[in-house]
Image (cartoon, rainbow, N blue to C red; front, side, top):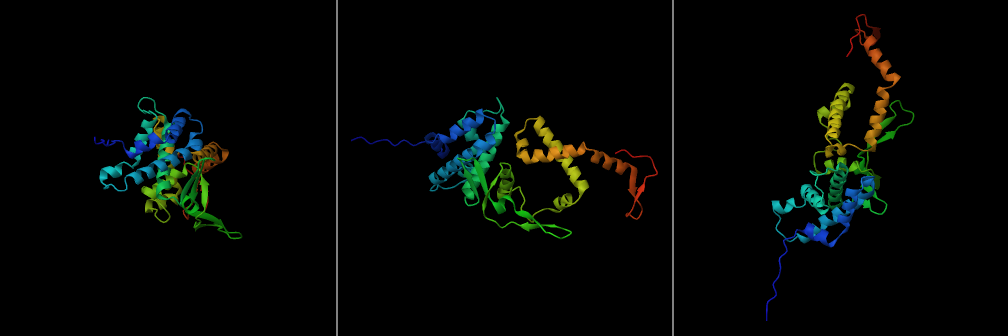
Length: 275
């Protein structure tokens, strides 16, 4: 009677899962080859498969002693490298920023689907992403009819799941896992910038300059801020800068000044100072 030898597999749970389930590899392959609307069409699908892969890993390793090394297998870097390897993506040979940002956000959303299942959901048929309302929008603006100051901020307590755009993932992820801020956690400097137009203009210039540099370098971090809402704001800002109203404001600042009381406008007597 011969004893059967038991083969010990050296494969990780990630590798075992993806060998037996082809959906993740298929969706990743589609994302790699098709850049048009991949964020909208494939992000929910990929994030759902990432969620399933993480849950599979947790189930397979639940009886193992958890060490720093085993915990690292579910970090973003480990997952990202595995997903890239699945479709043979090598960013050094041919960088695909659109593909990378889909993977980045899919991993973030996948982790939140695992850790906060009641707060996040995806519809893989309609390609929609849902987040609990109070998580997506911690504060809402309430309009007060008939009052001079006719708006006020109000805490959002709704636990209804609402559809969001893909850019919301980055902001909410920072709040959930560190590096972000939630209601009431603004620093003194942040509050100062928010209430001081001069500080806002400086902060905008510095951030915009860095944003353009990321685009020039084709850095994937560029997509952390780039979404439809951002470009809408930038387009509106560009229109203002090229408007007659902006030129009138610039001329006003050059030709007039406050009087000594700070309550009246007087014409400058000295030559114009061009900033």
